[in-house]
Image 1: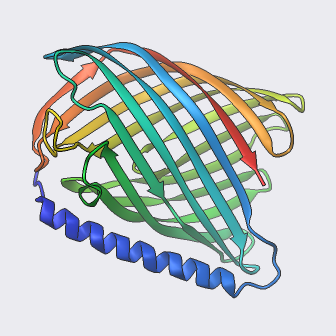
Image 2: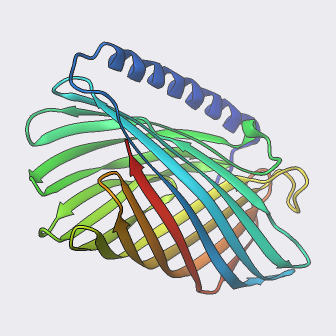
Length: 307
């Protein structure tokens, strides 16, 4: 596979950053000219997650565990009867603890920003899309060498009052690798008054699906499955100086949610990470090695809020 050098990706990152800035200016300019169709509606979430000791098939590493703090915000506004603008992003910090003679990476910071525009063509069809911007780096890594960007575009269809579907494509640059391409999917389906299905895949981290059942007005239970992917720049003091780290896995989980009010919900969840893989590359993106890790249990808590 062809690997691009650092200078090329820095130029790509600078171009993507310029495109992002232009898009943000456009979004704010459009919203500034809006009439009285309502103000910004904002929602967010905060969460903690952890995974216990997991055996790793790698030289110098016997097992590892991780913890993660994360949060996100989304603010949306109807500019007019047809145009909707949404500013959304999330941040996570992940701490890895390896047991062995080497530490491939320790603490990783990931910031994503995905503004989105949606234009209603009629009562059924809509167009949507927007740029994406990401910084993904271990502590101490250079920010300029840790930036990627791209965008998504899709078509939405309102099947009924209880079923909305959006399909499209996500394209993003990668650190020292070819472009990443994946489906763009958003599905919200109220199957019955109590049973609902949600599915989302809109950036390079992967996607997930969840089937939920409401137990009255306050409690809900659910089952979920998804794919997770993180690719990040290492620092100049790492085992692999200025290289690339990557983690890939699939997850299955159960959750319980409690609704405190119309705007605050707490979720507790737990499950298994399966088919996990850790990968190391040098600073040019050439593979040094990859290691599978055993299935492992994980759990977390998440608070969702709106205002």
